Every structure is written in structure tokens, then in C-alpha cells.
Length: 169
Image 1: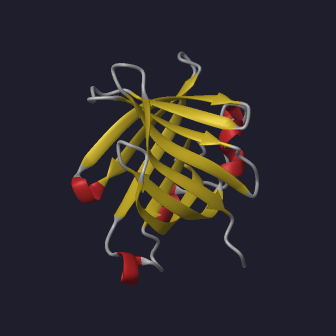
Image 2: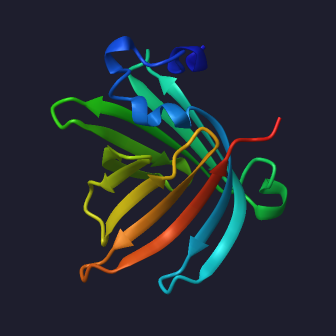
């Protein structure tokens, strides 16, 4: 019942234009997930999955990402199931986005803006570093995502990358 109420067939007509940048993301994705240390060295790699849907009567975009993927858990261990809800704020002409990671009871809020084949979400809560989540190369068949921090000196530290592709039937 809850899933039926949560997921929508598409965006409501009055939200269709605002949510257009998210349209290519709707559906399921296989991920190659990589984590990095402060020096840029790879610390871990695994498979993941990411699922996007229109939600809340077409007034939002929701997603769930899972790392490691359900198929890789037997070898890569228990990971995180993160849930994001994105809504459009017409006063900001931007997206408000909240990500929740239940494994560590972590919540992050973002303000997001669309670019050409990209989406950038800037974290809003006070963190030690400025955090951004960036989608690039968005197409019907794939995209790249990265989690990066910017320190007080303006140095960018990439923490995590996802390479997403549509699952093969």
C-alpha cells in the first residue's frame, strides 16, 4: 500500500518542466562504486544499484541507492540503503533535496540546480567541509555521480564516485 501511494506514473503537469532534468534518471541503474581517501587513492570498490521514481503524486522525485548491491552483499558485506526525496522550490528556482542513510542515522539536506546534462546539489547543514553531490553526463543510458568536499583552502577532495549504466535485460 505505501509503495503504491509513494510512487507516481509521472510528474504532475505543473511540475513537468521543473523536473525535466530528472526525467532521464527515472528507472533503475547498475553502479560501479569507488571510495577515495584524502589523497585520492582508491580505498574500496563495489557494485551498487540506484532506483529513481516520480513520487508523492508527481510532486517529487525519490530515489534509493544501495551499496553494495543486493547481489554483491554476500561478498562485499552489509552497506547502506540511502533514500532521497527531491522537491522543486519555485521561490528558489531550485530543488530541495534530503538524503537519509538509516545505517548510520545520517541526514543531509541540499539545494540543487540543473545545468546542461548535469545536476549539482550543495549540502546545507554545517559540515567540516563544503559538500557537493554532482551528476554529470546524464543520458538515457548512463551518468556519472561524485561526492566531493571543498576544504577551507578551496581544495576539492573526491570522496566517492558512481558510474551508472542501465541494467541489461
